[in-house]
Image 1 (cartoon, helix red, strand yellow):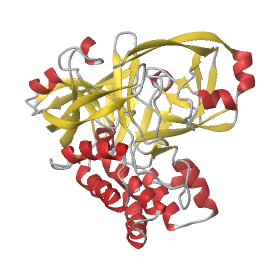
Image 2 (cartoon, helix red, strand yellow):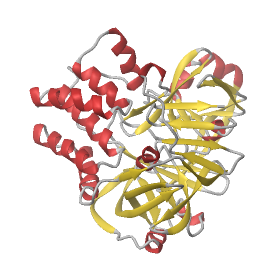
Image 3 (cartoon, rainbow, N blue to C red):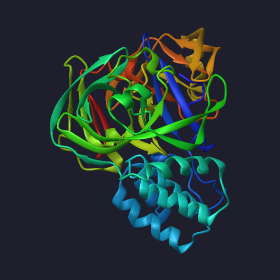
Image 4 (cartoon, helix red, strand yellow):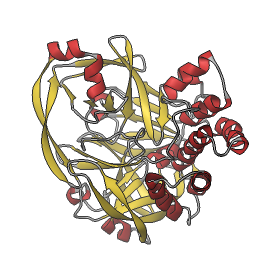
Length: 418
């Protein structure tokens, strides 16, 4: 993995990589937004906003909470009128950012671009937002992603900490990774050629924050048809990278693609039984009830509300990560546990920009409560970055794979373990 994987507060563009036994998984997170003034804004992620909403209400709080829980209709009810009433306000800037991410993670790039353009029209230029504008602007030259999902199943298996699912892409068979920690799908040059995709050069670059901070140019392509089981997705956006760049250098033909949040949201519901070799999708969703949801979105990444020693902790929910890592906030909140259960270790960080070794803490075990179930990690790791994250870490497939089955209902924003 890369050392710094969360920067919504700093509005950065981040590339993240994780190393498994044989496969380097690369999840890409585009986290950008308009610079906000300190006043007249609401801080905290969706779970914090939900708590505030129980105490008092305002149009901004209602709209931001709805956007965080992917409640598009309610977000559209509250946020656009607020922007229209005071377009130069910090509240309007925050509302635009929420709407841009709401549409971006659903593959509705034209609507996302509308609010990015609105932000530029209302306020000063922002370098990070400018990078997002280039990316979304190019994708918006194509039709938005469309999804038709019915109850069905697809062959799938958990291998080396990654969920591989059978697909048909432009009519050709493949086996791609499902990665909730990535908000734009990734494909190699050779796989794009195999599928007959038109690769487009983009006049921009992304910042890779990892072993060595750097920037890299990128290209885009849009897949006309993606089939998973009986689900049909059209116009799926991909970032295209070289075959000799990780993670694809170690993967076989027909495997060199990673499916991100817009695809997962398009499936609507997912159920994986790690021993069954099958992924069920498109079954009936439960109603969204904010107080029952244990998933929300912070910008473009899904967060999971879990607990440790009876206290709530917030983790990135990342099916593309082979392992769970805890971050500095976990160490700050539980220093006695770290002292009594931890010992010194080291971790090599490998990324697209190089590699480095840094000190870490290895815990004998960590017992988490997730969706009413106890998940015991042996061992668990605390790493020193990202230093400024308000989150406690990232939950990976080493924890999720311990369950007999895991169900993700993106409409109800709920993870269930059995």
